[in-house]
Length: 129
Image (cartoon, rainbow, N blue to C red):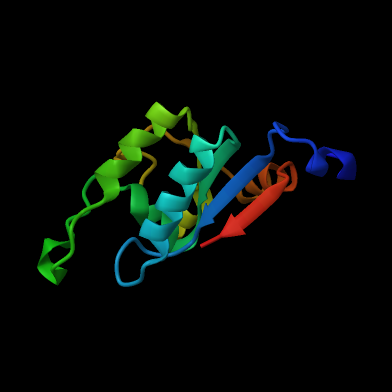
């Protein structure tokens, strides 16, 4: 995207939201999800990446009731309603945490760390939470 594109209304930018934090204990995961939905409402090209402890955000088996929190993971199912279908989970982050490549609340693409770097470099904007 050229500098001229920034001044033209209607130009779609590629946004990648990188989720690195566990889903509970901080506000990062929930705030990231809210920002993603807002960005998509403005017709931007939105992708999500889940690395490090961020991989826990998409697990269907999440149950935070013991810590007095509401499970917001099912909200990720709304992403499809906003045409957000590019969700990437880093394979190495799964392996490092002893997790398998299934059991997510939504369909994801499992990618290597090297593939994730390529995805990140192809974006106009990368925001990390």
